Amino acid sequence: MALTPRLEFRQSQTLVMTPQLMQAIKLLQMSSVDLTAYVEAELERNPLLERDDDDAPVGASDAAADKLSDDKHADEFSDNEAPNSEWIESDLQASDGPLTTKLDAAPDDVFPEDAPPQPVDPNKQTGDKWDLPSARGAVGEAPNLEAYVADMPSLRDHLTAQLPLVLITPSDRMIGRYLVDSVDEAGYLRTDLSSVAERLDTDIEDIEAVLGALQGLEPAGVFARDLAECLALQLRERDRLDPAMQALIDNIELLARHDHAALRRACQVDDEDLSDMIAEIRALDPKPGHAFSFEAVQPVVPDVVVRIGPDGGWIVELNTDTLPKVLVNETYYTTVSAGARKSEEKTYLNDCLQTASWLVKSLDQRARTVLKVSSEIVRQQDAFFAHGIRHLRPLNLKTIAEAIGMHESTVSRVTSNKYMATHRGIFELKYFFTSAIASAGGGESHSAEAVRHRIKQMIDEETADAVLSDDAIVQQLRDNGVDIARRTVAKYREALKIPSSVQRRRAKKAGVA
Image (cartoon, rainbow, N blue to C red; front, side, top):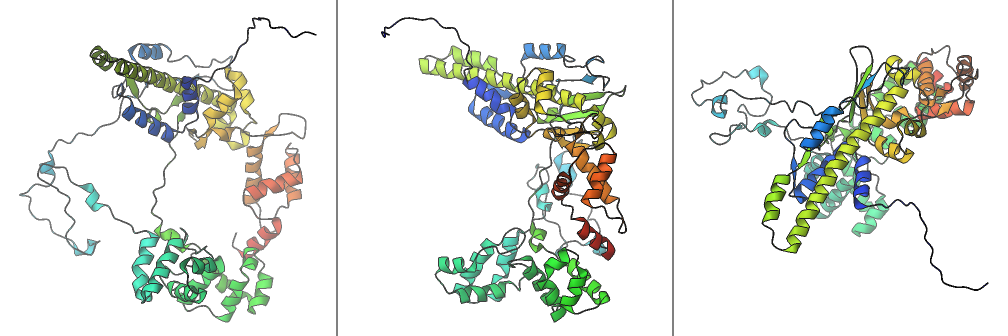
């Protein structure tokens, strides 16, 4: 067979990952916090982007705003499409704008100069000084409310301030500062002392001596290397570390298993003394460093809000507070491009215009996609919203993707790091996707999350005389139509951090569960 060159025409379809498509995919899987940070960076980088402070829809120009207004109920489900729910209304319109508060009085009227002195109640003194910090500021300025904010010291600052009280020599203080930096948020010292001695080029005896001094600092229990040592330090500070209590600390694993018979033999005490000792242990703080944790807890901001409609259906709408509002300033582009002379300037302006336009379109498409997926989730899990977690249905990404005509990967990106606010609480969108457990009678399968909830409910309702074993739980679930194996029940119980039936029986008889 001879090899000869020839020309052929072939027709094929390929998906090209353009920068715009990559940007749309990137925005789709971002959380609301990451999306806000990304848009803020684009606002600083692109001069043609500006915030939309009006009541126009998110990321839309005037023409797009009219289109959004016309398509207000485009994603509404009819009764024929949703047999389990009456209707779902979607609304992409922006809210009426942020609430604002207007002060009738000028800033100078808040603290008038000629105001008579107010009497001070000595019973209401909260600080070390009678006079409050100056919050007025300069003339004509608003009060400085930050002057009243308490500054809570960190655990590291609290321990560093106590170092001069227990460490005298400079070498000991250097070791002490290193150990302070090695303490974790709970107050434990997880660093190996031999590695510390090697790094500081000193003897391990010096490290242990400094550690012994640091273990006497406040709060009691800091610089412990494990839970037993932490509890022992707190008991020593209370002068309660007698031999019986030391034996209890040495057998702390028996206390975790509620094996009181073995504890009585190890501590050589009777039931009454053992109960008092256990009560003292439970009064201690296993994580003393957490009292100085001042990191602000970031609340979860829902991306979608589900509420009950006037006719009993479910209304699904986007949380407009989490959607960045940006527009393309075409007027500024026209003004600047008219004065551009160099080709580099025109190229830069065209790139900025194209980037800004694609960002606005991507944000609008992201909002529509999130709303579409969320609406279908609500339709599929209508029984959960109406009756609770026991009616959660098995659901996977493929079911949602086929219902709305999207790819599974798109649905997966939409449900990542997105939250839904309902009358039953705030849930991550992935919470509604659970595996299926077969029905014992061959009927409709059960959701794994609903079965876990049922197992927890059964265990919470048990008494000390009727503690359910895993086999008993399996039998009750099968009687209720859930075909489940014993190992699956054990796996779900361990995932819920529920001890075994033996440990629960001991705890209930001891009156601690």
